[in-house]
Image 1: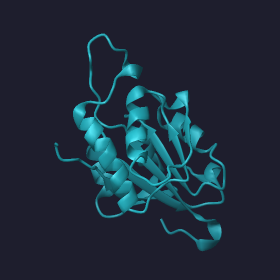
Image 2: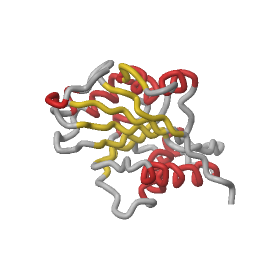
Image 3: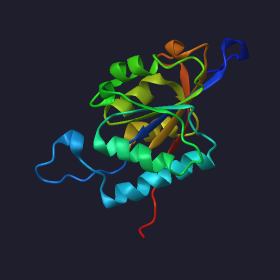
Length: 180
């Protein structure tokens, strides 16, 4: 995919799968907390986004406990976190539902962070990516693990212009924190 400068500003969709969750007996799916590894990896994801200079202007987050906690720990690694909107439509959403929510993003937002769940996030990344740098698309096809961060870039006048095959998958990172 070759982006034209006159097609609009460079926009980035940063897709973050929630960190590793625990599965306590008797706890409903939406209320599952992060596992100890997830607590470490969520903060590592925040550091990775800061180091890559990929901080969002706005975050959209699933209201599930594990997604909310991932957002809280990741954004705590930044000086001033951006606004966050918790949207129940992101919980258990498939790619078309996720894209519908993303397309509602205000045009002044150039970098959007989406925090949610698989398999929807993986499907969304694969649907939007017309191409990928290096082996990024193959890596997403193989596995989009917990705490994975995919960055999709494209030029467009606004978020409604984002569609299948219109973005370039510029990076895929899976931050893992050391045990402490």
